[in-house]
Length: 285
Image (tube, rainbow, N blue to C red; front, side, top):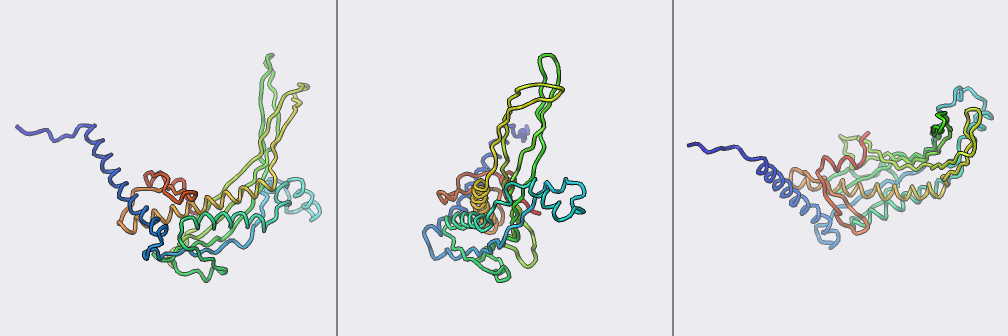
């Protein structure tokens, strides 16, 4: 009598879990070993990270794109429109913004104990290889724009009313080349954004218009500087995760695991499948 060669669903699931976690354990071992050799400063800790920091900040007010005929206005008219649409960009100190971002990036990167070398001119970055990791910040942009919103509500009598308002957004965007080889010119992107919040209370209804008592939580330059710091930490964290992922792939020939790195403890905080984890990383342009 022939034996039934079909595996039950539970057996298949158990086999899959065993294979997955067995692979994860192996991947985690290699990634942890890489971090630990710098923590212990062993003779094998020979890799370095070379960084070309951003040299300036581009200011963009995207709200101006919605102004009909803006390009045909006189310089005085354009200045007036820009002033009416701008509340953050004209108050920012670019040197402070850059200092916040680069300070956070370099500090978080240094938590890994991998030596960091700052290169003044991007053209002097070494060719990226197994010993030379390279980061070149191609461009940084501070972006501000107003987004229209509308609150709708209906009275007990069935009358519909609406209230129009705008919320200001501020975004810090960075484009970078990471470990770019001669044959690779991929641009990576990352950004962070904050926006104003609004609360309103209806005080009267008349002629189809709602009179509101409004309260806005406005964005200030200090919020922008705080955002720059947070983005710097995030970029450094994601870059270490990129290094770990590619190191395991290079060492084993394959990698199915994504490692979530925490610079506060210089440790791998958690793991996920590579397919899921890479979604949270840099965006390729």
